Amino acid sequence: MKRRKTHSKTEILEVLKSSGNALSHDMIQANLKSDIDRATIYRVLNRFCEDGQVHKIVGDNGKQYFAICSNCGEKKHLHSHNHIHFRCLQCGKVECLERDISVALPEGYVAKMHNLVISGFCSECS
Amino acid sequence: MKRRKTHSKTEILEVLKSSGNALSHDMIQANLKSDIDRATIYRVLNRFCEDGQVHKIVGDNGKQYFAICSNCGEKKHLHSHNHIHFRCLQCGKVECLERDISVALPEGYVAKMHNLVISGFCSECS
DNA sequence: GTAATATTGCAACTTTGTCGCAATAAAATA
DNA sequence: TATTTTATTGCGACAAAGTTGCAATATTAC
Ligand SMILES: [Mn+2]
Ligand SMILES: [Mn+2]
Ligand SMILES: [Zn+2]
Ligand SMILES: [Zn+2]
Image (cartoon, rainbow over all chains, first blue to last red):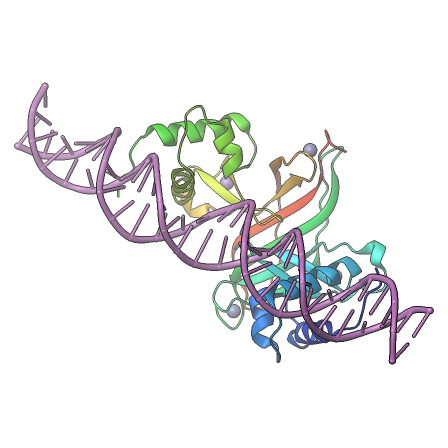
């Protein structure tokens, strides 16, 4: 399964990059120049995640957000995202705070993924 | 709006208490002795949350889980849940780890809620 | 240019949770 | 205890978010 360079990929990645924040599917769709199908957007995003270009955050509203991976692009095997995310309850913005968290789990527990979200009001909305 | 003592409330609370873990709607329904409607279960749970008896966690699978509040029952105004939760990818169990997290947010940011979930494999599944 | 196949669009579908409304049952009142 | 009040329930419909199957399309390899 070799990846192909397509219009959809390019445009979705561009929206994510220029935003700088974590975006939900509908945020992405709203910022696209061309119309791309909902299912396609999800498929592209999930492929990005598999490839380590993007990571997914599940908000405390149950929605998925996607953000460019800043540090872990090259080193896929180290694709752990134990940083905190912040979701503004007013403006809806979701951002990666570059604060890593390391938690000591109980004996025998193995961590695979971290989904750390703090919600509240961002500096522009508080 | 005075709360009433009902069969549904009693039974749902009993399931939560005897489990000790955070349970999703379907986990609760499966453990109920009598049949209680889905909408009712959600309404009861949301009322528990409002009253500070229970808190809600949104898993990295997008599902809601509900757990008894251990410390914050009496002091509603301190109803902050900045502890970590663990979800087992194998057996599905979700539990409250009593490890509080305190994050220093950027200037001007105000935290309202914490939703901190680590997923992986629990001691029985690893 | 042609063939192989990864990707897309569309529609249908699933899952999770909420809401309106009439029926029911818990608590207050007489 | 009987009656009234209204919080709660059950049912159905609905909404939002995300996934999947399949035929059509576009990208890459030959
Ligand atoms: Mn990353
Ligand atoms: Mn609690
Ligand atoms: Zn904001
Ligand atoms: Zn387990």
